[in-house]
Length: 246
Image (cartoon, rainbow, N blue to C red):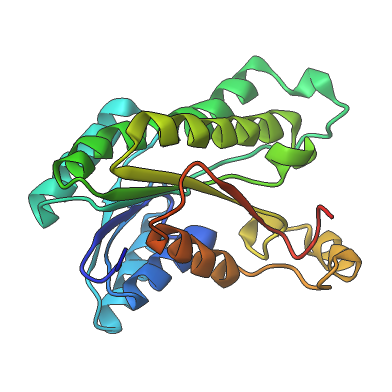
């Protein structure tokens, strides 16, 4: 798929991997909708950067864990651009809880992470699917994590939620075929603000990776766009982790 002039929604598109994806999509000619929940300033700055580079972008606020907010966001996109061709389900949250501390993995933590990380991705996919089906063409890319493969990560509920994202990817690939492709990128450690306050831990990890460097948000963004372009692939979970899981 040629991304030029395609309309792309990037959830959590103002920061980290989402920002890098928004910028990379614009470089490839896509019109970008930068979704945000709380990071309004960052989303607007991302849009400003795209506009200054000659691209086309808007920012729209919506909490992806709220189905009605997602539907309203998609309605606004249709009113503005007339269609949606691409969805990058990037918005995710976590809680830093030691894996062995089961008592801190409270019901509230489970609900909060699942609402955003899993249900939010489903809500967004469900909302955009009718418009993609109208054109008999579309692509969805979910951001998973190696935590969903290894069971390790910032918390047990986070790792399980990302395993669910991997399962959701395969189920949606079945449900939305043949016209909508659904794939998943599962990054390892990525140098973003998620490491804030734990930079020393990140730097200690890097020499132990096969490639001896932490992936950048731009590394992930480039592959996200490549996966969106690839018309012969669906239902796949692709790991990008500098050899972390080998």
